[in-house]
Image (tube, rainbow, N blue to C red; front, side):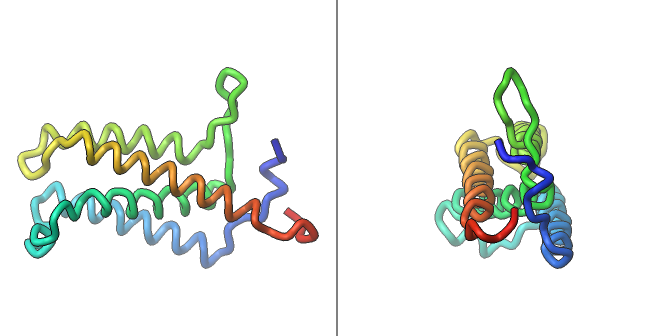
Amino acid sequence: MESQSSRKPLSLAGQAMAIIYGLLFCILLWVAYQGHLPNWFQGIPNYDKPGHVILYAIAAYLGHRLFNYRHISIARLAIPLFPLGFAVFTTIEELSQGLSPNRTLDALDLICSLVGVGIGYWLAQRSDSNRPNNEPK
């Protein structure tokens, strides 16, 4: 595996975008737990399923880039640090919805969220490997 320190870090603007997105993501979760999501969302059939995939993919993509593609070694496997942590957070957050009067515990939401994490990770890895060979990593 390539040395992670040799990869091009996320630009300052990219870092700001990732942090702002993370804050907006947390605000969205808080609004949902308060039961204040806009009513017009419910007019869109299954709006939350593609929403989970897209929102979690963007978060995983930006987070993996923000963490400079860091991996940890577990049983000789290189596990991506941010996607792993985000998947654990996602699982806990989705399971905790069963305790909220304003949220609904839904296994398909969890699956869509984790698929989004996987897509975001894949896109981040792909964006790094698409740099021309003559550009230093």
